[in-house]
Amino acid sequence: MSAPAAVAWEPTIGLEVHVQLATRTKLFCRCAWRFGAQPNTLVCPVCLGHPGVLPVLNARAVEQGARAALSLGMTVNRESKFDRKNYFYPDLPKGYQISQFDEPLAQHGSIRLDDGTHVRIRRLHLEEDAGKAIHDRGDFGLVDFNRAGAPLAEIVSEPDLATPPQATEYLDRLKQTLRWAGVSDCDMEKGNLRVDINVSVAPAGRRATGTRCEVKNVNSFQSVARALEHEIGRQIAVLESGGTVRQETRTWDEAAGQTRVMRVKEEADDYRYFPDPDLPRLQLSAEWIEAQRAALPEPQAQRRRRYEQALGLSEYDARVLTAERETSAYFERLLAAGSAPKEAANWLVNDVLSWVPPGGGVDDQPIPPEYLAAVLQLRHDGRINRNGGRALLEARAGGDLRSPQELVSALGLETQSDAGALEQACRRAIAAQPKAADDVRAGKEKALGALLGFVMRETRGAADAGKTRAILLRLLQP
Ligand code: ADP
Ligand code: MG
Ligand code: ZN
Image (cartoon, rainbow, N blue to C red):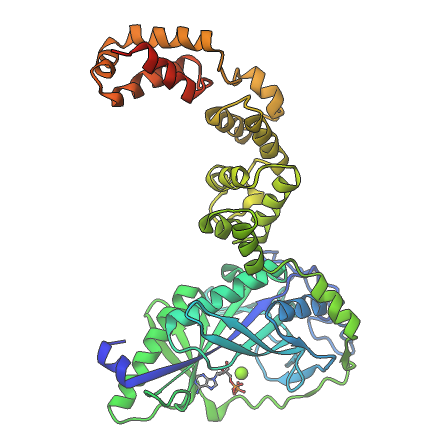
């Protein structure tokens, strides 16, 4: 967007997000569902759309859908229904998709952005996923039906977003909330979160009055921002040259960095929805809905505040520790084991998390919470210093399965605060590094580092740094 255009024109953005719900099996059959299996191995007559089969609703998917909705502050409807959305495409074996049309599972939620904007969420409905058409293998097409029938929640926002950064912030919040609730891992690379963008442009002050285009096939948050920038620029150019924006469905071409027209609205989107005669209306009791609410973890923002206010953690530590539910669960286990909150946060954030492999979580690194809790206890008892604690973590990360207590003696990590032994080591340091010793005597305290380092090496890191410093200074008094 060029600066003058941004003043004259105002974009309006609404997002339709599909997330795959974390369940073991599909929405209407008992096929297992997981990403990355051999093509067409997770299928049965139901999800392949054979004649005469009947769908049976997966209760777990309804649970996960309801929890998703509740975590977004939505109202879960006591009654909803399933409809057939009819269209033809090779990855849709039945010739229709079972979705929810005019009576969705839930409605009326919102997400608050940092700038105070409330983005209203219009609805959340359940639907089944389609298979995957593969077109990049030469002059023929392939279809993998593993994904066909996987449970999706479609979450539709009101057109309350005005800028690309707001759109990515909304998506990030949505993803964090759903991951925290444990209803989806929202991994865009696996297609577990997919975004359709709706965008229009109107003269400033007349938001949401322009004709909108829908942009599909946007596969990362970064692409969402890029696609929006491009599409907003395109619509402004059309309007400024006196043209009109046509309502159409466009696709994002990642390589070309632009949107391209897919189909014009008038020709498409007549899905002839009607209630699925094979599925009864979905009725949920108030008690069941409350039970889903009760099953949700303490909300992320609330836990973050509690870490800062009740436990006295820094804003940074509280944010890192509540970014993922598994990290927070790890931290909670340290607290349950009696570790001091600040120490525990420090070691978890600065040390343990450094072993998390790229793209992984705290459960993918080698140090279990019980182990770190034992290390913290040794620190608390003054038996090891920071280096010793670090050495214990390194031992475990390197595959040594002995307990911290065993390792302290095996590796000689016990803090040496015995003044006699320390003084001996300090005298050796002074004798070995006369130049540094002279410098300290001459008032250059910086030179103390070299002597301290010598003592640390001699004691293999086990010397108490404070005490060593004091002894050295005493011995080197001019
Ligand atoms: P449809 O029923 O045709 O899909 P909706 O009114 O349900 O249309 O809107 C679909 C999406 O388009 C929603 O996410 C909504 O926020 C967004 N939207 C609606 N009006 C506009 C607009 N003027 N500009 C941009 N997005 C819009
Ligand atoms: Mg729509
Ligand atoms: Zn199946």
